[in-house]
Length: 191
Image (cartoon, rainbow, N blue to C red; front, side, top):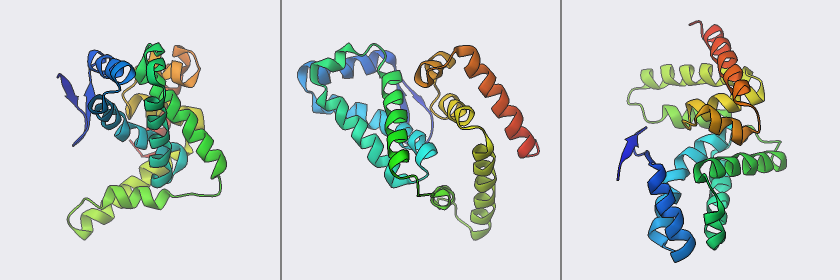
């Protein structure tokens, strides 16, 4: 298997591998292939959904719902031409559903705490916490669609075309959102 290393413990499978796993799950109900799909999409999905929901446990629940639905699709799973785009669209839609139902919750502090918890010294924790909070504030200041497009391209490594399909916008609009996001983030972070 050819994999590209993203972050510690996270890999991206090739399109051929995804298609093979998709086939095995759809036609053979192969649990090992499903596990591979699950663990391939889960970390990306949780990070992506957390951007909409601001609560880690809600993001995990939304991702689990989407992944369960993939299993339940059975042979219809093979009707999906681009599984990666389909799953990211499903994550977005499920996160928006959850956000609508749980509008009263805001959990920015959990994100900062989780990202800073891995550091060793209290000084590093404080500096990291401040940096993460500054980045989160800068991201939050972006218009919602601009932020979502930026995170799709930068966090989940979607191509502009895939991001356009997921968001239901033109590729040129994705490009404009990315340019706007980079300009605003650079200005807000003093870069």
